Amino acid sequence: MAYHASSLCFDTPLKETKLLLASPTFYPFYGGAEIRFRRYLPLLSKYSIESRVITGTPKAKKITQVHKSEPWYSRAYGDQLPLENYQGIDITRYRLPEKPAKKRLNVFQQRLRERLISSHNDTDVIQFLSPFRMSIIETFKLAKKNNIATVVACTLAKGTSQNSVKNFLDSYKIKKIYSAPDCVVVSSNEIKDYLLNHGVRNRIEVIANGVDVDFYKPVKSITDKENVKKNLGVRAGRKMLLNVGTVHPRKGTDLLLRAFKVIAQENKDVDLYIAGSRVDAIDKKISGFSDELNSLLSDPILQGRVHFLGLIDNVHEYMRAADIFVFTSREEGMGNVVMEAMASGLPVVVTNYLGFPSVFGEDTKQFMLCDLEETSIAEKTLELLNSESLASNLASSALTHVRNTLALNKSVQKFANLYQGLSAQAR
Image (cartoon, rainbow, N blue to C red; front, side, top):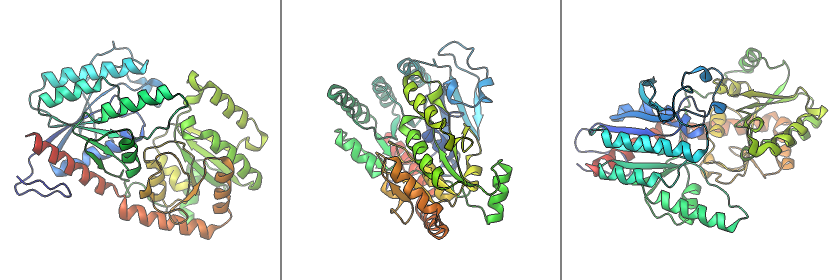
């Protein structure tokens, strides 16, 4: 059977490939990589990819109140929970400790290795989602022993610290982990360069994240937008800025609030909506950051104009209602919410974060790129608020770009290509 790396091309009918997605967190966790693969897996079936998931219980602080009622957290650590099914995909879930992170990941890897030992040819390829610890290398070795191909997703480029010893150890860990699987998948050339700079010389495939352009789409008219706003409880006649992401230093929520203070002083008719968990309020490690945010929010200028939505399932509706999407992250993988906002017909203001991907397009054509400081963010946002024609042209160009180059089906086909090829090689 001939396999060609650039496209799905086989001289015999595709043999069914059995894919196991291994991730300590999956649904109902709202991480970017987990959400993407929730959309990919059902679509892979048309390429003869049969998908299953092995995962763990998410941390209770990172899921919605509805899911906290699940009877998961009364079980002993390591217990296998009843089989679940999500959109036709079987999910095997294990009870994991809430903390520390090392114990969570070690329990998960132990259960995964037990699964590999007891399985009987039910897996051809394992797709791993981060985060990882060095213990995952033993899992790679066991998979190889069982003729199972391994794929790791590297979704985030991390910055360096002022501690040279920590930087050395982090770089060593990155090189060891990402050199061990059969293939590493990254979402952009920028993250590929990040791995190469850390000495990774493994096979690295660049597959841009795909956005579901049938799900994320613009409203048809101004009237429709006003109706969506009304249904969401947005005050009539108000401009709506939207940010999506966990309230966290990495996401730049502090930059966002300081920038919005400048915006709010110049424009009395604009409000800010933030969709994402307020982990700052419960994570003691960032208590200082939380205090800073609360101090900002106490300013009379922001009273009643900043709305924290928490974890919500209808982000797409807020994107249809919003007037401008503002993304102020400091570090990201690709930032799927930026593409989703573009697909929803929104003009986008985005910071030049570590890992910023070139596939988003060009500054001032598909988005407004700003520096990692509040003055630049405020200036670019006000420029769009003050010019409807500029905002409209930017949004239209971004929508066309996403539909033509970053549609979900393109990414799914590339993943199917990869899985089929690795499976063929393993066989």
